[in-house]
Each structure stands twice: as C-alpha cells, then as structure tokens.
Length: 494
Image (cartoon, rainbow, N blue to C red; front, side, top):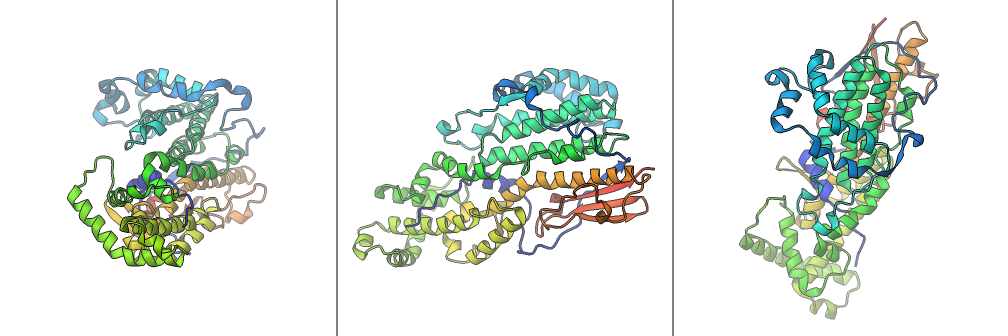
C-alpha cells in the first residue's frame, strides 16, 4: 500500500480563495495586460560601499530575544476604530494612506498618522532586530479550528502597510537613513514570519515582502536622486521564501488538522474508523470554516461512492498483492478508502517532488503530472481527496487547468521575480549614470552588472526603449490573472 506522506493542504485552500486563473500549458504563453507601475528614473550609480543600505539588519544590530513576543503586543497599541478611520483616510476618504501618492498626502496628516502608530512602529523596529522568532501559538493543540489559530497575523498585515507608509513618507523627505531603517524592519518582519514553516506563514512572508517591494522600494527607486539599491537587492536571500521547510512541515500540519485523514493516508487507521473517514472525505470537498453539511446528503454520497468505486478498488488491492481473503475480510469502506488514499498519495507525490526545483522546471514537471492524472475525468474525478486537496477552487469555481500546489508555488516565487525586476531597473539607472543619463537600447548593453533573468522564462525580462521612455515586462503565466504580472513604464530624466 502506498504510504507516501501527503502534504498539508491548508495553504492550498488559502490560495484557492485568493488566486486567480491557473496555468494551462507546459509552455505558457505570456499575457501583457496589467496595471503598469510608472517610475521616473534618475541616473544613479550602484552604491559604494555595497553594504551601505543593506535591506536586512546586520548581525551586529540584532539583540537576543524572541521577536514574536513583541509582535503579539502590536494589536494592543493600535488607535481605536474612530481614530483609525480619521487618520488613515482623512477628510472623509479624500486621502488614503495606502492609495494616495505620498507627495499628495498632506504632511500634517502623515505626521498625525505616524504619531498615532508610534508605539506599534517601535515594537516593529525592536522585533525586527531580535535574533529569534518562535511562533509558539498553540496551533497543534487547537487543531486549526478554521483560520482562528492564525488570527495573530491580521494585525501584522496592517502593520506592514503602516510601515510602508512610514518608509514612503521618509523617502519623500529624502531622509534616506530613516527610510533604510524602515526597509530593514519590513524585510526582517517578512523573513521572521517565515520562521514557522507552515505554508500559511510562507504565504504571509511572501505577501509582506511584496508590500515592501511594491510600496517602499519602488518609491525609493523612483524618487529623485535616491541611492541605487542594485547590490542591496542582490544581497536579499534567494529564494526569499525557503521552500524545503514548507514542504517538510505540510505533512505534520495535516496530522493536527485532519488526524483521521492523516492516519488513513499513512496506513495507520484502525479498521472500524473507515466508514467515518469516508464521510469526512466527502465533507472536505466543500469545506470552509463556517460550512454546515446535511448528514443525510453526506451519507447518501458516501454510500454511492463506495458502491461505484468498490470493484475498481478491489482490483487495485489485488493487483498490489493483497490476498483475496484479506480483502474479503475488510469492510467495503476500508477497501474503497485504502484505494482512494493510495491513488491520492501517488498523485500528490508526483506533484510535490518538483516543489523545490527552480520555478520553470517545477511548473513543467507539475503540469506534466497533472495532465497525466486527468483530474477532470474518472477515476481522479471520483476521488474526493484529489478533488478536495489537489484541485484549485476559487470564487466558487473549480479550475482543472493546473494543481493548487503550483498556484502556491507561484505565490512564493513572486518576491524573487519582483526583486529580479527591480535589480534590472537599478541596473538601468547605473548604466545611465555612466552614459550621460542615456538608457541602453537593449539590455544586452549592460555589461558591468550581472542581469537577472525571469524565472518564468529563463530569459531576461522584456525591455523596449522609445526615446527616453522604456517598458520592462514580466508577464503573468498563461491562464492566470494578468494582474499577477508586472509592467514597469520607465521615464528617464536627463
């Protein structure tokens, strides 16, 4: 019997709720319709020394202690709801702290906002420079209970946005040292979120990094005579989100979230519990934290599943060497459940073994396995484990084009892709600094700095220059929302 550990699917459900359309081909064609980011670039040579604006705190700046202790106090320092509404969206939403360009956000309102969050920001600055981050929040003992065990992350999501506001305000004042300190806090908080190697923490780590890159770093690069961050971006960890620990911890998380399913998948379920597990498999196919299931409907579906699948399941066990007398001694639910678990373990292993490959290779391997599985056709279509765990469901729509695990893999790839893009932008600024402010006609003209490639294509990013305006493209994978890609529209000042 196949007992390959299943990788926990809690994060896949999270991705399914937030991700857009999925990839469809092993050779994805790019899309090019997305919101452009417009930046005005001034020539700027790569910083000397290269560690001047390092984006993570140096070891000498770190102090002993657990960052999480400080992060968990942040919620208690936030302003009350009425004050929050007034300072984040002043003048009845005429201005927005996370939408209004910082040079249009009135200075007095910015100072009022930062004063109201000063204690929370102090906690963040201190926590980001602690040596350890141990997220011992009792998720094992609480058996996940929906999303509640991870509710402590909600205040930190808001804190990430406030930190980016502070960085943008400091940049607008040309206070590079203060903005640099805030950037270090942002990237350190992101990395610390990932020290608990559950997939949901990894996704939050990726999200925090994107907030820092898309708000603070882009603001820095596009602001006047800002120092060049090419080497500092290059110095960030790669991959930014560690992949291997996430993969290894997924099985452990399932053990606490769905213990009977975990036992079944590992061949450790007592025989008398198989009827109950079959019914739990049925409920998983539509499970959300607030869902309620009609017991009669679940019972009827479980009965149909066992009746329809039993002949195929019995043949599967016979082909695997299980003696006929042993099969006859099993309940129909055990025969069918064992078969469903074996088939799921095989499919999951085919996908997850490519998890740590470079993204382009991982995508190719996963899609090849996915297409061979044919999840929209029997027998995979009839397997509730495959349908509940491996198939992507978002916005109440089932998407068979690519597996949920590939969507999660792309979400964790996004910070690396954006870092590579911004390194390319800084390489362009460096080139202009040595060529009388003139940008290159082609990226191949940049020879004094290593140019990163797009992890989705294995080639340099798309670049086109017209006069003193250029575009830099990182299209979304085929089948995904075009807004999951990037386009930078760059104007080079003289």
